Image 1 (cartoon, rainbow, N blue to C red):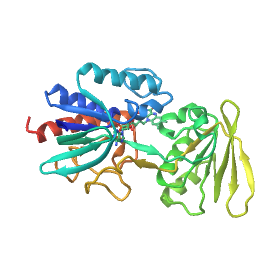
Image 2 (image 1 turned 60 degrees about the vertical axis):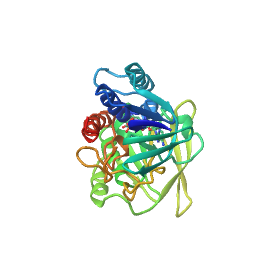
Image 3 (image 1 turned 90 degrees about the vertical axis):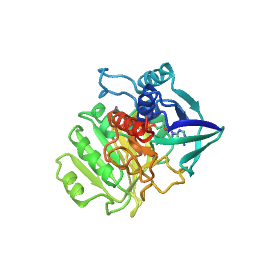
Image 4 (image 1 turned 45 degrees about the horizontal axis):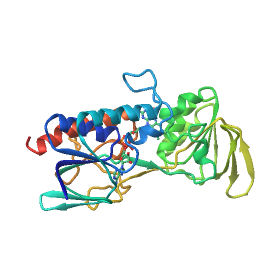
Length: 302
Ligand SMILES: Cc1cc2nc3c(=O)[nH]c(=O)nc-3n(C[C@H](O)[C@H](O)[C@H](O)COP(=O)(O)OP(=O)(O)OC[C@H]3O[C@@H](n4cnc5c(N)ncnc54)[C@H](O)[C@@H]3O)c2cc1C
């Protein structure tokens, strides 16, 4: 078993921020990552709101972030944590390859986009299909776009996109929206929006990039093609918290924290996309990492 002052689970922007801070304070910290270091930045086609770069492809920024970690001397471990539980006044993290014991834990695990599950969804990702309107909406300025979803995130991002797009369609599989009625009214009030219910997507169309979506009315079976250059499936994000056996999650699996990024269990901290929040961006994740780093330092009494 490997022992650390702090184990950071997840090597995305927030985990990296916390690990760098803790290491710089002489705290024995390890960062454990199950997949590609850099987190979700790896799948951002182009990042243009990151200070220091006019714009940079997401994978390039992810590499830069990871290089910063590797050059710092932080212990990096490629492993997937499959169980987290309390053990006395410490925390036991079980990985697929190894077990880790830590005085404090930073949960920097992010979320996973819920996919529609249609053929060619992965093929069109970054070629007209995006799961982040705030990040990628401006690529579709003056074009026709489709939002799929009926929750608050879909409605809010549709309102934002309507300000950029020539025409915005929103389809939802039910006639009633899960999101707030106020947001539905706000969206309807836009001059360039068509809301279609109860419709589901059937097929993503296009050659090299997306050019349309075939949709179907769930009640009548009627099908139609929406000719759009952009599609945003916004049907939810799943927090990567299934492995956590501590009573720190809310009803959706997200992890609420206090001002110091500490969860309801002292010694367990969380930050970044895994928190319950409306906006999920790199700068917020990094901010959380810094705040958590300082708080973990205090918690450890260093
Ligand atoms: C398509 C797209 C485009 C985007 N574009 C932008 C943009 O232009 N600008 C911007 O500011 N933001 C953008 N974002 C949002 C940004 O990428 C996220 O807000 C940010 O990456 C969140 O950082 P994080 O560290 O909280 O989580 P993540 O980056 O998701 O990192 C979490 C890490 O934890 C790892 N992990 C999870 N569970 C485990 C486990 N059990 N064991 C080990 N490791 C684990 C994951 O593999 C992952 O690497 C975009 C997002 C998407 C999806």
